[in-house]
Length: 377
Ligand code: MG
Image (cartoon, rainbow, N blue to C red; front, top):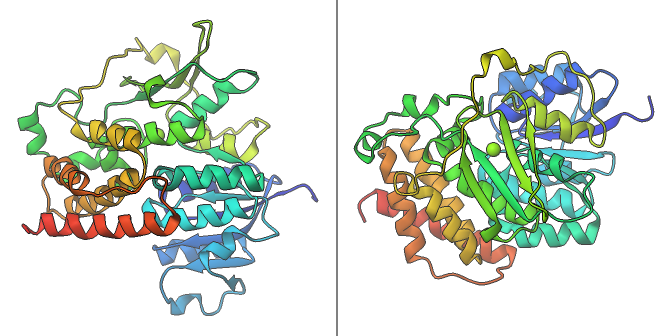
């Protein structure tokens, strides 16, 4: 049993965290959970501690119900850097993923990265630190996992990346219809089961914009060589084109456990009877089209922020995170997410090649500015 992969799962009660533990459960004798960290859902967290018996835990709030567990409490960043951990799964959502991702990368850990905001905010710093420490970043995002799988075995870089997008629940909506959509409608994603933040980001297509920036850093790909293709069936998870115009795609049923498992078991593939296959008799066609940048302005905002670089992507993430929270609590209309994020970006005074402190400062400024604008200031 000496070769069990020792995991720390950060964000264990969230959607990706829960699905990570489903994979761990489905592949007995492969993993040992050393650390668990969560921000909310204490009932589930207690169950996870009882089941996986981690040596170390972190919970965001003071919680009397954790008083009697035998696991040792540690700060989030310390769990990410534990010497006894082989792989850190960063499944925290939003900005909260940045600090532990950096801690894990600096400690030379392999990081199964589901949190895209950390790379969007601080891609230059994280990739440089990973190069220095030898840490490997294994993408969990389905599109990036697909690209990574397509690139395996190739000795050359890709010439072009085609990121696919389901288009979300509001594909083909007019701007007037988009103005009236409700929280419930936005949370009903047609193909993927994900957390609330990423589901709203998928409805605005901000998520796809963030994924373009994520792909830029993960695969060292110029923005001009990253395309987006709307593919509503969500069967092709992304494609890669090579110098000779040959194209590779990765296909599968849209289930996040597949890219999660690939990162966890890499470089091996393992049978998991719980993972659904594709029933080809049910798939009549695979279709592709260009995204509508006018109907989904978040996509344009994100790609522009990525190209301008510096502190712009951090401001984009921060403003979006606050705007999505306000939308989820009915304090913003759906179309105001893009309007306000755009306003915050246009008022930002950027810093090129920012330090982590400068990124954090830009993040704080953007959050405050978005709240002010939402409050009518
Ligand atoms: Mg994705």
